[in-house]
Image (cartoon, rainbow, N blue to C red):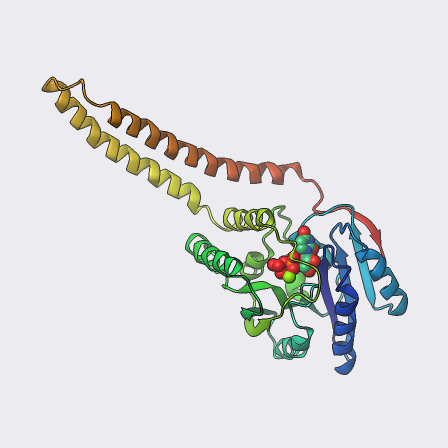
Length: 305
Ligand code: UDP
Ligand code: MG
């Protein structure tokens, strides 16, 4: 009987975490799986960890790690995967948006020999229009830019085998975009559709800032295309300005030099814009290099239960 590890990051989930643990437990017991639940407290400011402590007292199969501060969802997931000891590892959100009821389906696909089983959310109950649109635009953009295919609607809800997990954990990069890395590592994989649920309790902690940071990480760690685009943009500008230069020289030749205030403003503003964008793109990549070379630990653990 293979052992199944459930890995779930938590950030301010005090209202729903007990319900999450009991829902997972009941699915595991119903299917008589050998299992463990690895919870990672990503620096919650509420009573999440105390509730988890009580749950561990009642069920020794529950394990928990507490970060010294908020390191972000992607790092929390990474930590949980490093500590998971199962033959199959399932990562999922701890707010019950990822229904534990489909765990048996994931496991049966793993028994068929798939090393990675992705899930694709067909829709989310009560999803806001804004979140749906930003998600659609984001997946369109990342797939235009990235060399690795990122499946739209994919969340960090998937099953991986021990073999895939070992490979994943050996990837040491700092700005992690786990979704992309799981596509990147390859292996025999498949996907399963599900309908995402409404949050059981509490509110989403993926703020606009956190989403932007994830989007930036995913683009810069999976594609150098923005650098190339800024180069092409530079070439294009040079071409246009060269033609403009011919026009200017012609004007000069015919003594028409007094006009031209608006064209000067145009050239200055246009060039300034293109240069700033290019420098910004460069800056994003240099910032990533800077992060990598510091070689700080990915996360700091305050307590282990
Ligand atoms: N989460 C985390 N660290 C964070 C933000 C979120 O560990 O800084 C966890 C959170 O507890 C949840 C999962 O990541 O289990 C997804 O977060 P959330 O539900 O807030 O995002 P959404 O589902 O709205 O995209
Ligand atoms: Mg959620």
